[in-house]
Amino acid sequence: MKHGKKYQEAAKLVDRAVMYDAAEAISLVKKTATAKFDETVEVHIRTGCDGRHAEQQIRGAVVLPNGTGKTVRVLVFAKGDKVNEAEAAGADHVGGEELIPRIQNEGWLDFDVVVATPDMMGVVGRLGKVLGPKGLMPNPKAGTVTMDVAKAISDIKAGKIEYRLDKANIIHVPVGKTSFEEEKLQENFNALMDAIVKAKPSALKGQYLRSITLATTMGPGVKVNVAKY
Image (tube, helix red, strand yellow):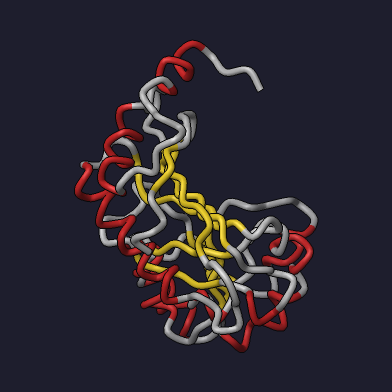
């Protein structure tokens, strides 16, 4: 893959042979962000897990203390009193059965996170083929299947992110924007790493965290020293 001049100049600032301390890595990532827009700072964690085994799956959520810098649109599947509760808590869209054809047939996906009350999961389950591949399916582990829709919405709006293994057993998550101060990115990174360390599957033998890389949307990757975790 050929990279542009800006990327090549930025890449010169990063020593690929070095495992940086998290604070240094964050500082470098901010320096190497050259795009004209406010890039997202992402963390990519390669694990020693084998996601094909249920007991080695990792999935959960963590509220980043300083948010993600992104406005998150929340869709809630609810009925009865929970509809009003969701609307009062600031959900962007609330509905039930009537949303199925809109999502299935019209391709409406004007939301970033889906929350559902447990009694609506039968309805939401019919959208599995659409929401599943996009990582939008509500899940109790991530706190998105709950009767407390108000808390779920406020957590998500405050900067709650979901983490899970992809097919290559890597976790990819945003921890803020390049416009964030270094301290704020560091706090978010620490909160994420604490959650990931706690989520280590007890069935796993061998090394849990193989590598941690920080990068911006368009910038080069910076390796973080895994030994600390």
